[in-house]
Structures are given as C-alpha cells and as structure tokens.
Length: 219
Image 1 (cartoon, helix red, strand yellow):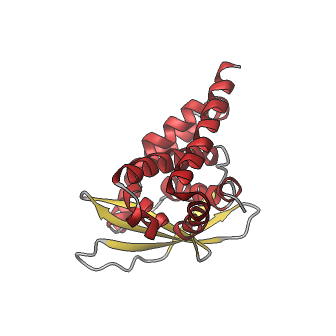
Image 2: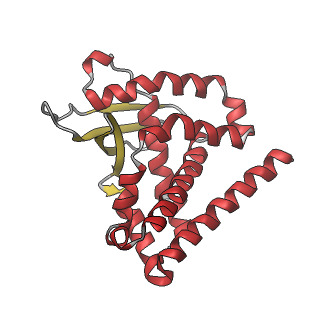
C-alpha cells in the first residue's frame, strides 16, 4: 500500500482515538497522574468547541484545520515523533532535510486530525491505573475506547516530558504502533526515491489537500 492509502486508514483511526482520549476524560483531576492531568486540562476546551461548533466543523474546513492545530498539536512532540518514524534515515538526513520533513509531517498530521474531527460521535474511555513512579519522565497510558456499534479498542499512548510538559509521541492501537506504521511506509519511499523524494511526496499530498480546502471555501 502506498503512502496516501496507508495514511487514510490506520492514521485516521489513530488520530481519531487521540482526539477521543483528549476530549473525554471524566475522572476528577485529583485522581489522575501527571500526564493524565495534562489531558484533563485541555479536554474542557476541546469538548466545548466540538459541542458549540458542530455545523461549522462540517462546513468550514479551515476552521477544522485551525482547531486541530491550536488545540491538539501543542501536546505532541513532533521532533521526537519525526526522529522515530524515520529511524536510521533521520540520523543520515541533513539538518535542512530534518527541518523540512518535520514541518511537512506536522502538516500531514494536522490535516488528518482535521478529518477525524468530523467523525466524532458518542464514546467512552476507560483507563488502566497508570504505572508511574516519582521522577518518571516517560510513561505508557493504557486505555480502552468504547464506541456505539463498534467493538472496544485497546489503545496505549506513549508520553514523555518535553520542555517541562507531558507530550505524546506514539500510540499503539490493538498492539500496532503508529510510529512503526509510518516508519515502514516512509522507509519504502526513501529506498525508492531518497529522502528528498519522501519530503516532496509528503509536500505534494499536503498541497493537494490545501488546494482542496481552499476550493471548498470559495464554493
């Protein structure tokens, strides 16, 4: 499966689940550990926006994009995710290539987040007690996502402290890692067309989506 096809399946499922995780913490903040408290603090804002802007979410792609960019993206460590998904190719890349890739990769995820917002329906998330000791700065947050008419999904979010804040850098859905999936598809593209080819391919996908959004806004 090519990059575009792979991005439209597992990626969208992951991003939808990330949104659900952020939006649905109902536990009292005092009962949550550090990384969970971070998510709790932003959940009220996200839930309010989703409830009060249902029509706009469906009709205004630019608003949806901005929502994903403003509310969710600050809580993802894109630098770390970028290095993980490229693996050895990150170490071989020039500083310019790293910057370009990270920028286009973030654009790619923001666009996919935006699509996932439109699919939000009813859900419940249950949480396994967090295994975390004093001083730990890297944890796995185990959850189960339950949606009406769908089987429950086990999801594990990897989070670590970056610049004093807890940020996500990977997620496993039913044991399948987002980072691993990206690494596999990106590695194929690098082997086929090089690092420059991968960056150009992602840029092309991003620009195509941007033009589609601009066209929809003008119609």
